[in-house]
Image 1 (cartoon, helix red, strand yellow):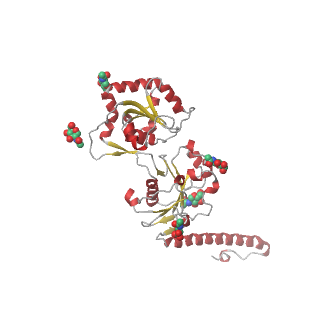
Image 2: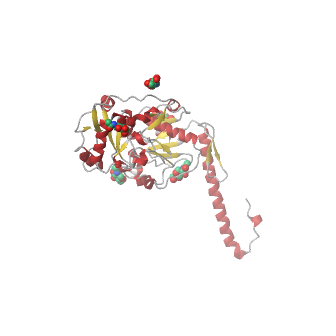
Image 3: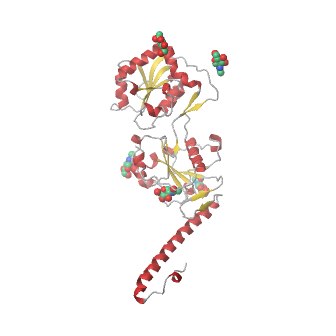
Length: 365
Ligand SMILES: *[C@@H]1O[C@H](CO)[C@@H](O)[C@H](O)[C@H]1NC(C)=O
Ligand SMILES: *[C@@H]1O[C@H](CO)[C@@H](O)[C@H](O)[C@H]1NC(C)=O
Ligand SMILES: *[C@@H]1O[C@H](CO)[C@@H](O)[C@H](O)[C@H]1NC(C)=O
Ligand SMILES: *[C@@H]1O[C@H](CO)[C@@H](O)[C@H](O)[C@H]1NC(C)=O
Ligand SMILES: *[C@@H]1O[C@H](CO)[C@@H](O)[C@H](O)[C@H]1NC(C)=O
């Protein structure tokens, strides 16, 4: 661009501001062009991998076309444990992503999946190399906020969230209900015992342990776990299914934090869950109201105990907690591969746009 044509020849007195103006304009233009060039060079670099990006006029958005073989870099193996990665075409019936834990892929990776637990002990555990403009960092966490330290390290780094929270960009619940294609006859496994509880992390000061201590004054509760009855992995389901009720007590209370205690220990074992966790309304986003008993429905542990004993005596009433199974089937399917594939699907299906999560720590608590 030639600015002199649009500008009158300046007098000597006005020359200095004019020169300053020129310098500013040239600098701005230079920086703009450099930025454009560097963005452009990543376009060609990534085209090699079969991707194609288009710069929009404002240079604010990169659009991904076609069905590319996206690369997802696992920044760490979750909890440092290597696991086999299953194909997304098999798990979700979608085009496969290239999922790798090999950090040499960093510069080409469309997304970097960062597992909170493995990076939270220092901000230096996050990637330190500048990220390519097309790359998205996904914050991955399945623990509750109470068990997720140093959240503030995560502010202003991430583009997408992946957790059990329903309002995550990529939603990974601990379980879900599937709708059956036709109704099934509900059969309840034989029940010879009353209330079971499996607990690995015994904290006497916790709400759930205090509640249990009150409850057991009024009703027999069989406790499994460290320091209690033993429950071998292979006997898990067969043991629990003999009980009428299971105490699905979460270790901390947070929105949507409903774990395998409900999905695996109760619903897949065909035991009626007695839940302690977020409010009933929150559970009802995942389950029919008559699929569980909430401790908040009772003024005291004694009242809950009386209610459970009443159900124990009345088969018709007890069976009503299984009616929903006519049309619904619980699935506690949980695997790292499934989560990686959910990330893969999200990257394939959501249109590319820039997004930063400035205050992750304010959201996740
Ligand atoms: C990581 O990927 C690079 C580039 O593809 C390759 O040369 C290297 O052998 C890989 N490393 C491992 C440990 O697989
Ligand atoms: C939180 O960060 C501090 C400072 O980096 C670190 O010393 C501490 O170990 C971290 N906490 C956990 C639980 O990783
Ligand atoms: C369910 O029960 C009804 C009545 O007992 C019976 O006619 C039907 O065949 C059963 N259906 C299945 C899928 O077992
Ligand atoms: C059992 O519960 C049902 C349904 O609430 C009720 O109609 C019935 O009278 C109860 N039976 C006994 C023996 O209490
Ligand atoms: C991702 O977030 C970072 C950090 O805030 C930001 O610099 C970058 O532009 C974002 N990238 C995308 C693709 O949204």
